[in-house]
Image (cartoon, rainbow, N blue to C red; front, side, top):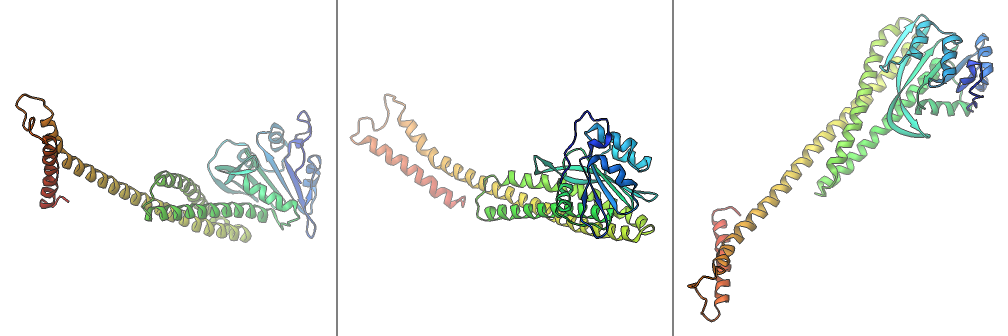
Length: 334
């Protein structure tokens, strides 16, 4: 369970810890009260997961003065840099990775940052806003899920992020299928706006995946020379994000082609409407000219004193329209 925070005025920096768990071989994960974290970290058996929010000054104070990590790890955890990062510092794995943000326990499309420092017996994770994958793994741990090492738990968090991105790509692909059905049925309404939203979202996803892929591939060679378990995790994640980025590029390309098809359909529809308007204008112009002529009310106006003159004028106007239509057909305009 998530540990309730004590009074904000507490002088103990550990009081600001969001949650902490201790993992031991063959045992269920044990939730730790904030004041018990430092004691757990001094034990030589098992390992500990500590999660903090950087908006809490007590958490920052605990990282700065109490966390058993290197100065470089402290700098990364407390820093303001939002660029993705992954590096080995001695026996520590330090990084900044992406994750989907939560807003009132609801997933959003915004990408946040998960900062972490990992050693053999400790995993510290920090965030500024609630993160979806961290919360999901937290619920698994609360339910009794066991993780053999800090690396396996971090792998589960990143794998959960990959799963979220994969589901989002599938949703965007389904949206493209629905738009395609409308386009094929000539039911073009808000398809351009829908395609625009799809491309914006898939571009954001691709940007994150591209950076993450580059980061993981660069790290692969270095990890291979240190720990085989770490190298295997990084290689597996790199392959997974390669596939996701390929899928994202495929969705983006489909959306672009659909945009071109929608634009062509709209141009065709506009051309047909302009053609119909041109024919209507051409057909009505001669009758309008004739009716205008007979409406001048001059003294010597033809048919003015002729019985049925109005009907004769109407027939002349209709004949002029029919002649225009025949002429357009002869000229193969129709």
